[in-house]
Length: 273
Image 1 (cartoon, helix red, strand yellow):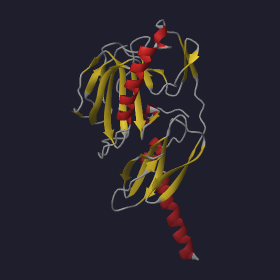
Image 2 (tube, one colour; image 1 turned 120 degrees about the vertical axis):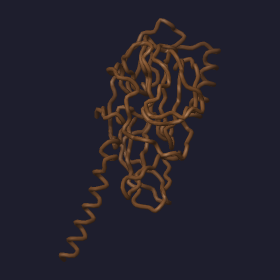
Image 3 (cartoon, one colour; image 1 turned 90 degrees about the vertical axis):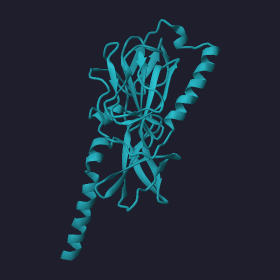
Image 4 (tube, one colour; image 1 turned 135 degrees about the vertical axis):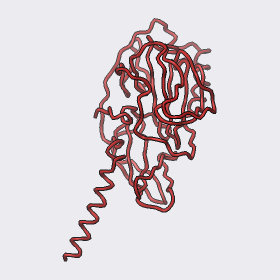
């Protein structure tokens, strides 16, 4: 009996060590638009994991492997599963209510584009989705990210947005209230995989931090990098502006994991349940 008790205590301590790991405490916010950290257990080699048929970021913490899963805003609360090593591993998505934001635009075409603009938007969307879905083998340099700019938040992630009274896609990133020309710095090392000037996003840069962990910056006044550039953490990618669908200068920052846009506040320690 004492031996059995000791074994049970060891198992409990092992489980708690995993459950209370640094990465889990930092990132495990399993709500729509959030992140789930799923324990994959120990392994001599890095395991692979998929969620909704897309590869998932996998990192090692001490002797344990963890899947860092992005949860899209469209996912309903309840049980979800990832696949790894022939097993279906469950995690539970909780409920989160996001606020509303009403915005008035003078340029009506940015609310209801004409046919030619719609064709442009469709083409640009395809290019950007391809970038979001890229998956490089590199391990991210850091998961606790730096803010791309120093300034107060002007719009949070997930806000339901109404332009001129008409509902459009929820806000897919964080907006920082900073002046035009403020340098934007990459929050982790990475490779520039896309730049462009787009109808809604204006001047835009995508940086791949590794394994489907991607930053997107948009509405920039100037782009200072090119596709293929390898950037160190803190490197300047461009300057704040108001290009595209924007009511004024600000810095918009997206984070994508396994092609799901998730709340960047999670990665800077500013997440609010």
